[in-house]
Image: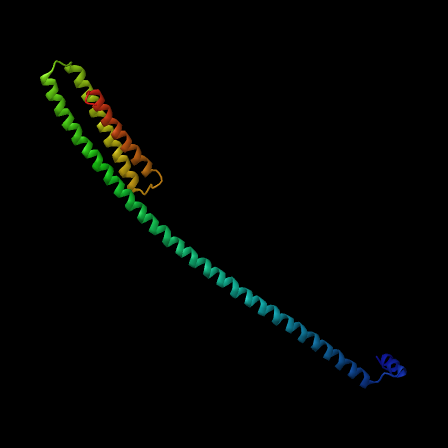
Length: 180
């Protein structure tokens, strides 16, 4: 150690020079530390701004999602209401068709009494028409189940099909009876 001190003294470096050098080194280290601290503060502030932007974007997305959810719920209610209304209309048409068929059967009975028609074949036709009406009722029940489960994509097509089938059935009965 003394050798080191002697060498320092020989080179002209004194203890004051060492103290000044240490002070300069500490000052440089403090400046570097302050600079790093400023960089960290700037990065932290950038992260905070970024977090606020992300939080705002998430809040906006949640609002849009809530709005979309409300619209879907409203549409489900509207679709269900329309499906129920269509079901009731079809049911009314089927009931009206039943009444018309009863009236046609009554007319047919009157015609049979007044003419010489093959009663057995006529009864078979009536039974077949009755089976078709039963089939329509079963299909109508299927439509009702579809409406109650909010199967809105298929229900309108089934209802339209049922109306067409009912109209076709009525037309075929009138043709077979010779009324048309």
